[in-house]
Image (cartoon, rainbow over the protein chains, first blue to last red):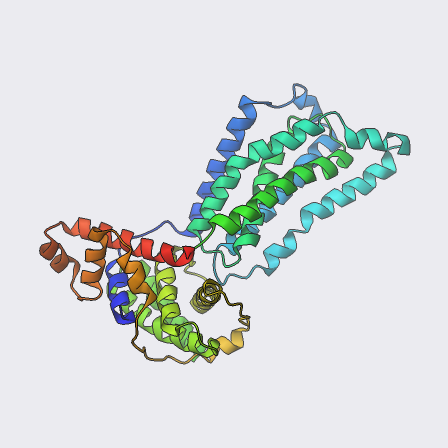
Length: 212
Length: 178
């Protein structure tokens, strides 16, 4: 088939319209949030004392970390899925969430006596944390990998890893409402491990499934 | 020349997305020539036929045209897809190459004409289900319209459009998977 002939076929197919990618991403995030919420509320649910907890800085700081991670990962994955779009600014914003966690850890180390560091870090919930963040995040991750197939990422492995970070940030936001361990020492350790697992899964998914 | 190309090409693609088929044909012809120039300059050692990469790029641009934002420049989008398909073509043939990401080199890509030989796309076409294959080759190789193809095959125009769309998507996917 000559290229001329191919163009005739492509032109005849011009009428078919797909949803613009930017809009599709918003839709995908909406569906992902609904799925994550459904898994969260039918399994562990929020902690019973969530209303008083909302008046404490430590509890609220968890949402700051996870939401900043989710928002920055969302901005990055959008541009990663559009060929030729500049990723530099979105990439730079990815430092924000880790930076906030590091700052909070330093503050915590100042405020809490050294003898309590270990107890705060280990907490009471680490197994639940490490199983439920991936469990809540796995559905959203599948949706985001599907979106990468719909898009056109020229760096599929990186885009897959960012899909994992986005799913992890989203899942951790829900999980944080359940968990009693509010210390930044706990969050920096166990949340990070759980989100890293989703990130690895996303990178593998990007390598295997995101071909176009 | 790049500034003029950019404005003209994004105008054509915007018109095409709004439903102007003639603008789309014009757009595709222009980018075929541009991408051909780009790919030929990048392929210095043998093993990969530039025209195969041109065709893969055109197909990818077609099935992924919803990934272009109408307010974004169109040339970086086109070259990013061409570069991805070029690297992919080398990877499939078991070679590794470095394709520089410099934008300046891209702007030197001059439009070039096609050369004819046996194509990867023919193999992909042969792999389609018979109904899709006959529709795609009727419109492309035989150069018939949607209406003529529908009359010849004794099916509705809608069925022709569906088969064409699915057939092209399947060919594009086959290139990605290889």
